[in-house]
Length: 146
Image (cartoon, rainbow, N blue to C red; front, side, top):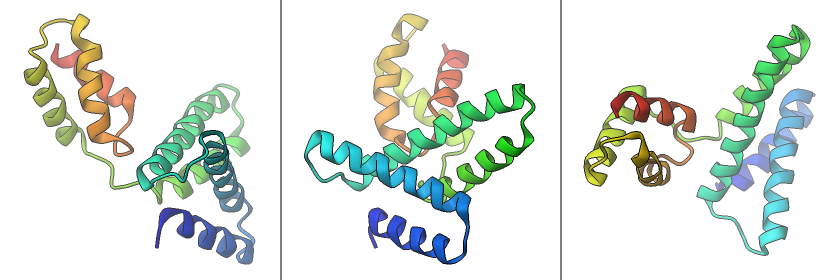
């Protein structure tokens, strides 16, 4: 079953279960996918869809920080639940150790010696880990190793 088909099936199930948070999260992801397909006039691949879901998760994590600052427990709970729902569609996340290996390989491949080479390293690492790790974590590991 493709990721798009899985999203449709899970949307139907969330409606049956009256799970409004899952329903809204899946609906928003499906809307984002359809928007990109219409804008680019092409059928998205599984990797493209994973990229969109990753972006949605990142947006919610960013919003979560704001909700915590505002001390809005109701929005914090809802956003955490949405993140849980969406991460089920992402591939298994890389551990920090696995990520370090990929980053160190990229550093050696580029021959990076300073922070000026960060863009080159990120350019090599990000396509390899698409959807399987947070860019912020990669950035942190690159800074630690340069």
